[in-house]
Image (cartoon, rainbow, N blue to C red; front, top):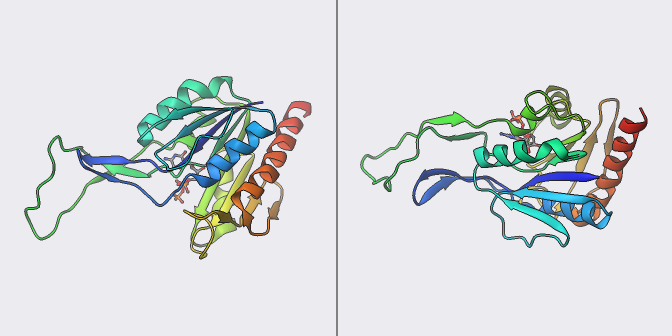
Length: 215
Ligand code: CTP
């Protein structure tokens, strides 16, 4: 398969020296890209800034903010058989980017934020993608309900959900504990290294993709 993977955080600029971002390390997305490549698939990894090495045999497209990630996905999704959205895209960005460094003037500073494009949410409708679509859901409460709602709202075949409030797993950790949320059922995978979980999840995605082709 040709597989697109998004990974890492985005950086939303505030001025020339500051940006808004999040705790994503990119480890889960990079582990997925690596596992796909090792299973013989052609992988394009579209990633925000991380400290990770690009896995062997993976095509790499670095981006910085949500808008750039959207444009990269839009450009490449048409030729993909499967797409996995593991990036922690900022949901909001500063309404304007100051050309000069913002100086400290008052005791408080109020930022106006505007919504970024929902990249995963654009894939089925706006981009007309008909391949296998996988999203991630990072939640701190009502994990299953929120993940299932996301699966339906964004037209996914699978949502990989994790509880980011649990210590030692998820954001910035080498380990994860995930729920695989399919349209008809849910499967819980026990806590493990992200590098062990990824090949297991890749096999599920291969199975879904094969079922979509054979109907
Ligand atoms: N995602 C995306 N573009 C965005 C926001 C999220 O592609 N602007 C993708 C993520 O890569 C992930 C999935 O959408 O696969 C879930 O992201 P999340 O922000 O949790 O979903 P939302 O539907 O925005 O729900 P909420 O923020 O309310 O939890």
